Amino acid sequence: MNPHIGSTNQRNLDSLQRTIVRCTKCPRLVRWREKVAREKVARFRNCDYWGKPVPGLGDPRARLLIVGLAPAAHGGNRTGRMFTGDRSGDWLFRTLHKFGFANKAESASRNDGLQLKDCYITASLRCAPPQNKPLLQELQNCRPYLFQELQLLGNVCVVVALGRLAFDVTFNAYKESGMTSLRQKPQFAHEVEVKLNEYVTLIGSYHPSQQNTFTGKLSETMFDAIFLKATKMLASQEKPANR
Image 1: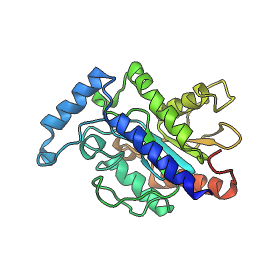
Image 2: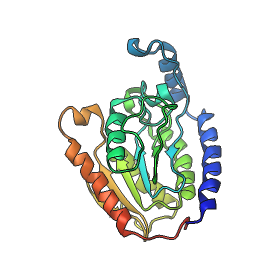
Image 3: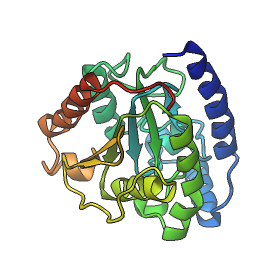
Image 4: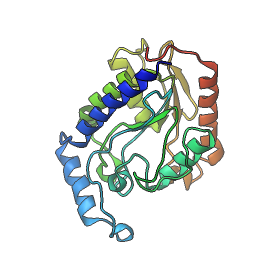
């Protein structure tokens, strides 16, 4: 793997992330994220909220891409980093650490020293939406950012989509950018596999939200199975760097 690819991609990703953070395309989301950051909740009343769009994070040479839904109002919208400071992130980072994709099993702030290896995390929407329900137009406004990430993350072999919406958004992004020849949207299910092209496989997973983990719809064993599957796929694949 060419060592210069990672540094070039990192600069391009840094530039994209700065663009994302300045985004004001969706007035409803701007109002909501700033209202939450201003009013806070009692348990975080002494915290300085991020209150802006949340960029992706991770290894620019990553072969594993994780796509979530959106920042949590008092998680990513507070900390400024995807899945950081909320219960979903507790599940995700614990699992990533278990399978060697993260140097830590937890993440509480964007300055906590977390590092991802061979893994990049992004989302379908970069701002926290009211009631976790984004509008179609808001998803469409955010779509170009995902397109750019897919182009820059040229080593990706496996995409894990957390939840039905992220699964659909990811498939549509590959389809609309001409990166898959599939025309019919696949049916979402936990552990479903879709071969998007010669190099990339999409895996569906239930989202590690409290709604799923507290009710038992998603267990730790089920979540581990997703990343065991991804790890085995990566181990079996050889791919040209930055294709």
